[in-house]
Amino acid sequence: MMKAVRFHGQKDIRLENIEIPKCGKGQVKVKPAYVGICGTDLHEYEKGANIIPTTPHPITKEKAPLTLGHEFSGIIEEVGDDVTDVKIGQRVSVQPIIYDGTCGACRDGLINCCDNNGFIGLSGWGGGLSEHVVVPRSAIYEIPDSVSMELGALVEPLSVAWHSIDISPFKKGDAVLVLGGGPIGLAVIQCLRARGAEKLIASEVSPGRREFAKRLGAHYTLDPTTDDVVARVRELCGGVGADVAFDAAGVQVGLDQALKAIRAQGTLVNIAVWNKPAQLQMNDLVFREKKYVGVTTFVQGDFRQVLDAIASGALKPGPMITGKIQMDEIVEKGFKPLVEEKDKHVKILVEVSPC
Figure 1 (cartoon, one colour):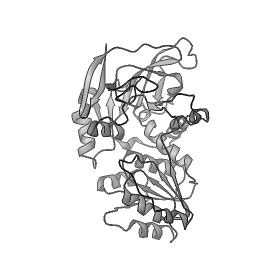
Figure 2 (cartoon, one colour):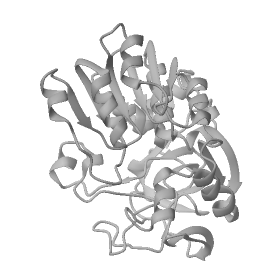
Figure 3 (spheres, helix red, strand yellow):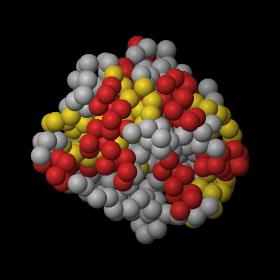
Figure 4 (cartoon, one colour):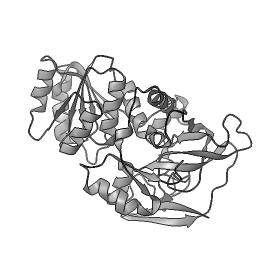
């Protein structure tokens, strides 16, 4: 038997003993080291199952209660008989997307857009918040020697940011507006700096998170409750507005501001998962030929690029880690502080088997 953190329902997270999974063909067994607590985990905890299935998932055939943890690093401890290109003892980061490989999106290489997609640690197949987890070989990315296991657990949110930039028309030297200073917004700021943004403006309500934004690479920070975001962005961008904006906040007022703050033929990229329907002022797009683009998670290869960027020093995400806890502390020292003390925290890591 092994210990695992399991989601049972709204505000019902339990540390339980469950069966150790067996490693089969095409699979790798990993001993998780560090696991990040994600905003999605918090939403499921606070509001109840949304992404976590309450009826059998179409691919995993599993439903709640399920093991949590989809941002994690670990050590390979067993490989399937037909897996020959990785070995026991390797340090790895796990790419958690579950996909069917047969739908139109998957055939186009867009595993993040799979008709039936899910996530290890949310949809079944175990999760990082357990002493052992078995994942497909395709989910494994080796961590370079110069990258710590703690940073290996940040690769997943950083890959969301990296992919959003790939989807956007951003180019080196562009002026960029980022809405939201939560973990994903801060990840976008870091990745933009690493990729050559020369004027990076962050809009965030929380004073603490504005400070994190500055520390992690924003050139300017705005408080949307007191600053005229549209006027300030235009002023900072020579009167024309930002080339690209990224919405990691998902609130109507921010969407309205961003559409007006980007330049003619500028692009607004939506990363946020919205809790309610949004309104889009179409004439703000039409009369100035602006673009609004949605992005989701990441594709194969993004993990490798992020790991390489950390190894080279282009990305330095260490300051995102604001706490480390044990599995039996996950609610009191993990979920609750991230909900109640947002000013103080970005990413709390759970030490499952620190290496």
